[in-house]
Image (tube, rainbow, N blue to C red; front, side, top):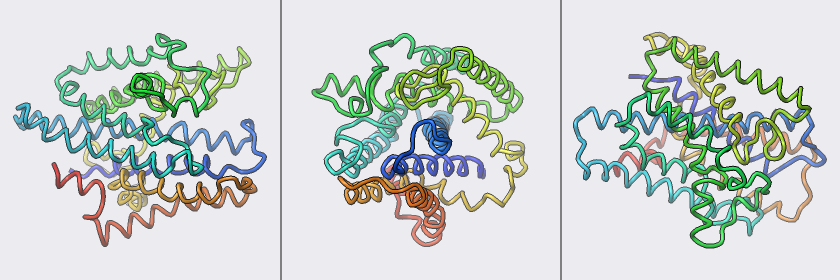
Length: 356
C-alpha cells in the first residue's frame, strides 16, 4: 500500500531538524530571542522533533503490528527483529555525537543520549506496546504527559544545554537517557505512543479530527494564559508556558496537536483510497522521506566540518547565516532524489532491511 503522505511527513520533519541544527551551528550575529526570525526558527525546531519521533513511533508500531499479526510471536523472532534496530540506532547516536563533538565546536559529548537513543528505547518497547489495547496506551500517554509535573526539579528546569549533554558516571548517563537529557524517555515517549495511535486510527478520520480540535482549543488556552500571566508563550528553555528543555506538559500537548494536524493535512484523502494533499505536486519530497535516518546522520557530518572550521571564529552576519541555513536544508531534497534514482541500496535504511 502506497502511503505517500508518511514519506512526505518524514521528509518535512527531517528538513526541519536540519534547519534548526544548522541554525544552532551558524547563528547570525546579534539576533536575540525576541527577534521574529528567531521565533520562526524556534517554531520549526519545536515542531521538528515531535513530528520526527511521532512518525518514527508510527513506523516502529507498524512493523511490530505486522509481525504480531503474521503469527511470528516467538521470543527469538522478536529478538531477531529488535537487535538490528537497537544496535543500528545506538551506533548512529554515537556516530552523531562524534561528528558534532564538543571538543571540535559541536554540541555533544561522545556518549550523550539523544533522539536516536530514544527511538532505540521505543523499538525495545514495541513488542510490549503492540500487545496493549488502545485505551491503555491512551492512559499511558496521558500519564507520560503529566510526568514533567511529577518529575519537578529532577528534570532540570534551570539547566543549560551543556548540563543536559554531560554525564559523569553511569548513573548520570541513565538519568540523561530516562528523564533529564535532551530527549529523555520521560516525557518524549509521549510522541511514540501518539504515533502508535495514529497508526491504529488510520481508518478513523473523524476520531483523529476531534482530537485535533480538542488540542487546538487547549493550544488557544495556553496562549490566553501566556497573555494573562505576562510570560512568554514558548521558549527553548526558561520561564514560559511551552518549554522544549525540559519538555513541559503544555509543550507536549500543543506540539502533539500540530504534529497530528500536519499529518492530517498531508494525508488528504489518501487514507480512503484517494490522493494525498497536493497530489503529485509534493512527490519530490518522497525520496527524502525514504532515507530520513541516513540524512539525519549525514547532515551532522556536514555540520561537524562547519563547526570545526568556525570554532573560535566570530558569528556570521544575518544574510550569510540565513543563506547557509536555508541552503544546507534544501540541498538534501535533490540529493535524496539523486540517491533514490542511482544508489538506493546504499543507505542506513537499506542496511537495516538486509540485516532484518
